[in-house]
Length: 128
Image (cartoon, rainbow, N blue to C red; front, side, top):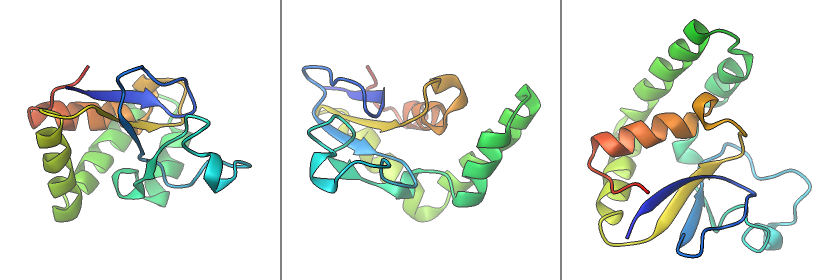
């Protein structure tokens, strides 16, 4: 049983389980009934995505310093009680269930899902 960190819209791993979309907006041009069938996500959970202001900051990050500033700000958002409890829940669920969380970004190193990976690992999540 593990948690996977994935790029939404990519083919699923055979044992991936439920795919959670941690994105601010649904995929453009895709009908709602196609989200799961087309490997976007089964459940949309924007509460684990950066705020709109931070999404803009991340998209504008050109240097490593810019990216570190985004990372610090997103980590601060994830310390808010509701987000923190959700991360705790996902870390606990990863011990006995297969599921994934993801975003659309091509490069995980410059995507908030890399920050989620670290935050979940800090909480003891079993990550594949």
